[in-house]
Length: 433
Image 1 (cartoon, rainbow, N blue to C red):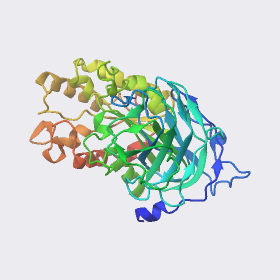
Image 2 (cartoon, helix red, strand yellow):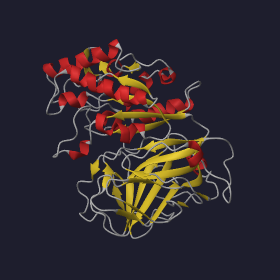
Image 3 (cartoon, rainbow, N blue to C red):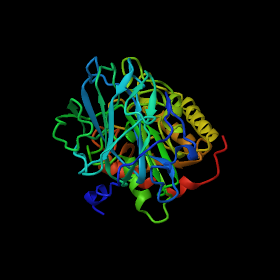
Image 4 (tube, rainbow, N blue to C red):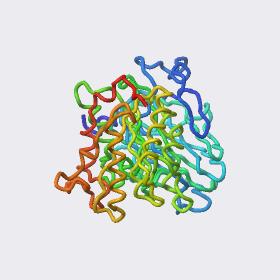
């Protein structure tokens, strides 16, 4: 089905009240409390559940934003769905803010074309928060909108727009979006035309998740990772991160589990250490952001862990493989406590990278040996084996190398998604830790 036809499936706008969640990390909603309700609003056409269709981890305050933030501006974020649904709600974050963030108008719409700031006719929905059109998000907090009735297609671009009338200080953002978003001066949040949106950005600002009410899926696969999961070298606007290719497989392959895919990658992220004060964009450690970025995601059923390479190659180098393994085991244990199945990835080659040394290579090999032996995760996806050059196993295969000898190309990201055996997602036996 063509993109334009999918985008044209927008339903009649009906505002539906749901619970509003305020807090630094959010929480999973109780199904009965969060379902679209009857009354003046039409009840869902069929049974369903809330599941995340898109998310991005807030990484830091935007480094080059104006000190006042973006007063009297409309920020139109373009995000890409993994599964569809019949209603949607949006999470906004002021996690790294220095002042309360006031939003006086927020909207959700389908993009008329991929990466376009123009909305599909009839798809624009105004978001409310506890039935109010305005919301003020405290410093360090998040808020989730009420649900709006909207037929959201899978593999489509959504426009999430917010208007901030006053200065709000530091801007919570996700860099390296590999997607163009937009800014318009003045209140144009409800404009279907993209004409006012003359300024472009490669960041996502303030928006951190979109959930859909759906019967297409039974849960979400949440991937916590670094720049390799973030897709920092994937083609801009093409949705060629390895998680996008995984979502494609889950939608199209016969017998595949019915899961959405949520990308919680932060470039530069580590298992053990938070970002340094001089490099804040790398985010809190995997251990410290696990609750916020994984365990609180709507419908989370499976966790995929792609972390550890930055612990080795970034300064200060972690040269004790057991400490990295212990951190990965802790992630698994905490996910098990919340009922998630955990799949872990081997660390990919970086031979030829400017920071590669024989000593650091030995650490990578030892971590991978631990992972492959079992006991760290419930199952293992061997990204090292999928990407390495058979003629030079310490390096990426040339066709899979973006050119920096660390990050995969689009072809490499596709190979990563193909390497994950989809049957692993439904296994029931936990690792013996």
